[in-house]
Image 1 (cartoon, chains in turn yellow, blue, orange):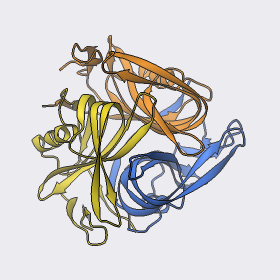
Image 2 (tube, chains in turn red, orange, brown):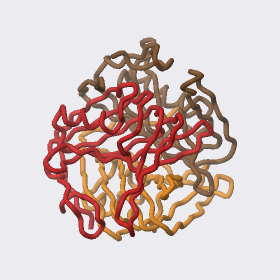
Image 3 (cartoon, chains in turn purple, orange, cyan):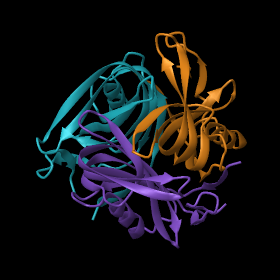
Image 4 (cartoon, rainbow over the protein chains, first blue to last red):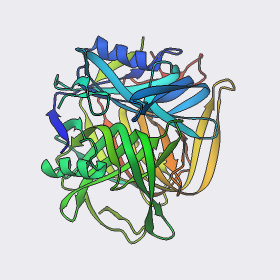
Length: 143
Length: 143
Length: 143
């Protein structure tokens, strides 16, 4: 059965990332600045270039793909939790090209922002803390 | 004009699905356990295999596609409402392969979880109740 | 560094769009009717035909693509803010065909609804106001 907790006392932050900033770093900075230990993030916008990861479940490691070109950010969904005691943004992204074709994966450093509008929901919980998980090789929430 | 209602008294649940669990069943169990009659769900993660539906608007029935292989869950969005008096999860999913290519559709039973982090927002409303809709052949919210 | 604000006093609206309505117009009407100056929107459902935009970052203009055919709305994420003093819905959409293939982009007028279930979160802020942005050629939030 799923492991989960009720969380409360929500704060909401809405804003835009800097032109030419790194999307993951930019979202991470907002979370650090506001000490967000638990939360959710969504965003839409456009990228000047993209970089994303895929986790090889057998190889137990991420491979990363870089795409030059201009893209719409058609979906960005993720969460914020603690990793090594600090706010950590884990998000997945989907972007589309001029024909509407979609590519997606794990949001990695290296996505250059053209424009990006985000919302972050922060919750009052320190229960979501990442640690190495033997079964998957990922850093998942302790259960 | 759209039919809609204002809803309130939100509870938020955040957690992770079991390794090797069925994603739709796992989300459904959380909703049943907490008696969620109205809500929203989002998730990211990875699948060990995928199964999703497409509704044929002319044929008025779902067809289902199964994909073996390992995928990122790049987007999962949906809602919770009542169907036959019980919590019912209606969600759409997009998953991506090792090249970032995206496939998506109606979240069906048969998606095997590798890892999945979800958030469920529960609202205090019993107004969203599904019934057969003549025009579409779907079970939609009574209006 | 990202520009952002904390926002508060949330209202939540959940409902369904009319069969055969225009999706963007339908969501816009709900926001106008409730005077939503700041918010978030998500939706899932199905379309009888689709139309979406891609912003050419060099050409500094949108091009629009129309797709006939029946699609699942597998993701719709966006925000509501003020443009010319009125509620403005800015959303990105991803839809999928009978094989699960995904296309996506900027939600434009011209998406015909088969069925659509949406949630809108409204916040009590008038700080998010769009104006022409010299650097991108887009109407972005004043910073």
